[in-house]
Length: 259
Length: 368
Ligand SMILES: Nc1ncnc2c1ncn2[C@@H]1O[C@H](COP(=O)(O)OP(=O)(O)O)[C@@H](O)[C@H]1O
Ligand SMILES: [Mg+2]
Image 1 (tube, rainbow over the protein chains, first blue to last red):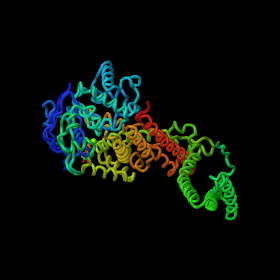
Image 2: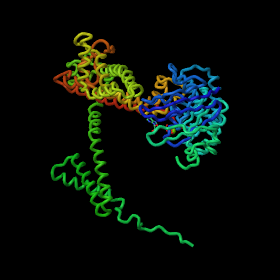
Image 3: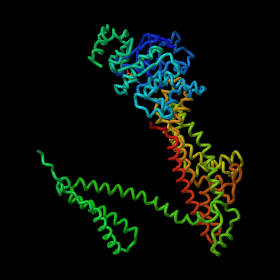
Image 4: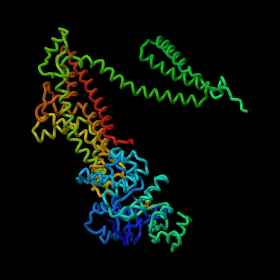
C-alpha cells in the first residue's frame, strides 16, 4: 500500500498571487522525501496541493498535473474527498478533535463518514493504528479519555495514528515536529522511519538535521524575493543535497549561510 | 561568620504608609459626619448612605494624598470611582428584585396560584375575598402554560432557521454579496421594535387565515421574528471561533464538508450555540407588546396553540394591572400581577442558569 506521485508543470495560486511556480518532481513510493527551504517559499502551499487541500482556501487554485500512480488528481470529475482518503495529512500544530476521546480520534476517519464497523474490528484498528504511531503503550489504559489531555508530542502521534487509520497510500506532514520538544521530535522521527516501509511519506521541515536524518531524497525550494513565486531549486538524494549540491543557493542554504 | 539579622520593629519598607486601620477610622468618621449633616437638612436613610460613601472616598483619598503621596492617592481615587460606578449599576437591579420579591411573594404563596386559571374569577369574587379577608382566588396556570408553549414554538421555529443561516454564513458563503445582504438584514431585524414584529405576524396571519386570527402560534411566529436574529448572531460567533485546523483535519481524513460541519464543527461549538439559544429564549419570554396583538387575552386554560386566544405571563401582568378584575377593589389583581412578575423573573433566572449548565454539559471535555 503505497503509491508514487509525479508532479508536472505545477503552478499554485492564491487568487492572483502565484505562490509556487513550475514544479516538476517525482516522489517515490515507500520512501521519505523532505522539503526544505526558507520560510514563505511555498513548501506548505505545494504540499497541500498534493492532496487537494490547497483549494479549501477561498480563491486558491492550481494549474498543472499531479499523478498518483498515473491518475491525475486534478483531472475533471475527480472528487477531492476520494483523493484525501488516499493521501493523508499531518499538520504543523497537533489538532486532535476536542470533542472526541482518544479512541474516537483514531476512528475519526471511520466514524465521521458514518461507516459501520463491528466493535472487534474497531478495537483492532485502534490498536494497530496506535501501535503504528508508537503511542499504544502510553494510552492503552485511557482510550476513553479526551485526546486533548495528552502532551503535545503524544497529540501529534495521535494525529498520525488518526491519519494511518484510514490506510492512505501517502502521508504528508507539514513541519510535524516544529511545535514539539526534542524528545517528542525524536519519537516522531523514529516513527517516520518505520512509516516508510508501508507508505510514501513527504515531510516539510525547517530543521536540516531532521531532513538529513529521516529522508531518502530532499527537495530544496527557494524564493527570489518577497512577492516572487517559490521554485523548486534542486531535488536529489539527501546525501547529495547536503554534501555535494549542484546549485549555489542550495549549498548556501544547507551550510547555513542564509535562511 | 554572619550574624542572623533580627526583624526591625518599624520596617523601612512600610515608611510613609498609612496604618492598616485607617480605612476603618475614615469610614466611622464619614458615617458620623454624614449623619450630622443629614440631621441639618432633614434625615433620610438613602441620602445618609450616599453621603457617607462620598465622604469616605474623599477622606480616604485626602489622607492618602497627605501621607502616602500622589501616586497612592490617585490609585485610591480611581478605585473609589470604579467601586462607585459598580454600586450605581447594581442599585436598580437590587431595587427591582427587592420590590418584586416584597410585592410578589404573598401572591405567589397564595393557595392555588400556580395551579388554577382565572376562569370564573370575577370582580364579585375579588370583592368577596377583600371583604371577608379570605385568600385571593385565581391563578396563573393558564398564563404560565401559554408562555411556555408560545416560547417553545418560537424556539422550534427559530433554532433551525437561525442555526442554518449562521452555518450558511460561516461555512458556505465565503463572504459573498448575498451573505453581506443577509448579515445586513439580520442586523436590521435585531433592531425591529417588538410591537412591529407582533403587527407583522398579526397582519400576515390576518391575510392568510382571515382577519383577526389570534392564536398562540401567531404569537410564536412574532417572537421568532425577534429570536432569529439573536440566534443567527450568537451561533455565527460560535461557529467562527471553531479553529479552521479542525475542519482541515477532517477534510484530510477524506470527510465531506457537510459531515465535517455536522460532526466536527457543530459539536465543537454546541455549548456556545445552546447557551446562545437559551439566552435568546430568556430574551423573548418577557415580551409583552407582540403577544397583545397576536395571542389576545384569555382567562381560561388553552393548551392548543393553533386555536383560540392564549394567555401568557406578560399579558397577564398587563391586564391585571391595567384592567383589574374588580375595578372597585384592585388590590387582589395587583397582588396577582406582582406574583406573576416574580414568576417571570424566576423563569428568566432559571433560563440563564440553564444556559450556563448547558454550556458546561456540552463543553468539550478536557483532562487526563
Ligand atoms: N492562505 C493564504 N492566502 C494567501 N497567501 C498565502 C496563504 N498562505 C500562504 N500564502 C503565501 O504563499 C507563500 C508561501 O507560503 P507557505 O507555503 O506557507 O510557505 P512555507 O510553508 O514555505 O513557509 C507566502 O508568500 C505566503 O504569504
Ligand atoms: Mg509552512
